[in-house]
Structures are given as structure tokens and as C-alpha cells.
Amino acid sequence: MKTLEAKIIHYGHSSVAVETPNSFLIFDYYYDNPLSQKDNNDSNFLSYENLKTDKDVYVFVSHSHGDHFNKEIFKWQDINPNIKYILSQDIKDFVYDSKYYYMKEYEKLDLGDIHIKTYGTTDRGVSFLINTDNIYIFHAGDLNWWHWKHFTKEEQKREEVDFKREIGHIIGEKIDIAFIPVDPRLEEYYHLAGEYIADKLEPKFLIPIHFREQFSICRKFFNVVRNLPIKVPLFTHIGDYTYV
Image 1 (tube, rainbow, N blue to C red):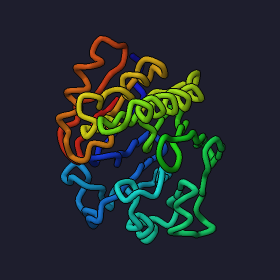
Image 2: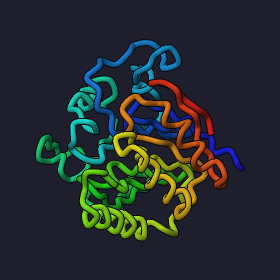
Image 3: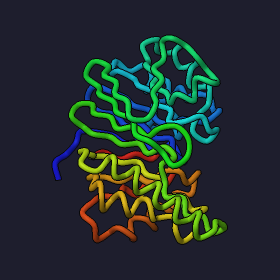
Image 4: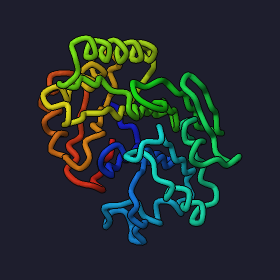
């Protein structure tokens, strides 16, 4: 498998970052924690050094739920005034600034050498597909196969149909790195979305998200898809990272 020249950092739940040769992308950062002033190698959380980089910094928010969005992110402009914010349209109900980019599902946005598409969700907001440095990154946000055990059979079927319909819009897109909900609250059904996406979208790397700080689920999911031709990095703690 060809090296992508990317570093992936997992901050827990759906908060992740991808560093490429020219860009630093941050997704769904929701912590109240102040940024660490130490280098990220010594910190579990995002650092000042990450944001003061000479690389282009892009901050993505898939939707306004509190486990994906925190207004703290807008303070980062004090550290780096060149940060660009790409936000789901529903964020506008909470924060509006003409400098920010608000996106609905099925839109495109080109910002210099970074190319962004949005897709839909099975909850709120959007999912993102980004091409930067010829690396294709998909962050699902809350696009998931929400098979809740307390749902009726009809509700469970509707969730399945809605999820598969949305994935159908994405089939055919090149994806190198995919961040997909693998939610332990779904109990034995936690892997449905990840396994389906691994099979249908065939990303090179699949990164579990939406699990709070239950990093053990990365190993569980790895064992589920170990026979498929994808890689699942085994993140173990907040701030853990890997190179791909």
C-alpha cells in the first residue's frame, strides 16, 4: 500500500486531525479544555504548535450537537488568524461570521488547493469528503447505521434504508482515510456502518469515531474487518497518532 504522507491524530469521540504535507485539518473538536502549549507529542490535546504551523489550517464541524461542536474553536483565530472554518449550515444558528464557510449537503467548495464536497447524514448536519495533497479524507459526522435495540422493527429498517441510501451517493468516490462512527451504545450492532462502508466504499484506512473515550472498540472493530483489504489503526488513548 502506497504511503499517503499523512499523520492522523485521534482526540477521542469524533474529534480527529489529519496533517498532510501542506495542510492541517481538524474535525469536530468539542472539548472545553484549553489548548496545551506543549508540542502535541507531549500532550493529549491539541497544541498551540499545531495551530501556529505554517501549513494551512482548516477546522471542520459536521453539525451542532454538543459532542461535535464547541465555540472554543473560534478562539483559535487569536493564535492563527489564517485558520479557515468549514461548518455545517446548522452552525449558523449558533455562530455567524461572514469569514466562515457554511455548507449544506451535496455542495462543493474549493479553497486554493483543498477541495471539499459535502454529503448527507442520518442525523444532523453533513458529512465531508476532502481532497488535499491528493489525499482523500471522508469524515462521516453522524452519518451512521443507527440500529438501536429499543427501536421497533420498522424504525430499525428505516434507519438501515436511510443509511444505505446515503452511502449510495458516495459509492464511486475515491477515499483514502475514512472516519466512521463505531458507537458502543449500539451494543452488538456497533460495527454495522463501519463494516458496510469498508465493503462498499473501500477506504484504505478506516478510523473508528463516535465512541467517547472507549478506545478498546478500535481493537474490537479491527477484529471484525480483519479479513477485508483495509487497515484499522489501533488507537489506544486521546492524543494517540499514526502515520499512513
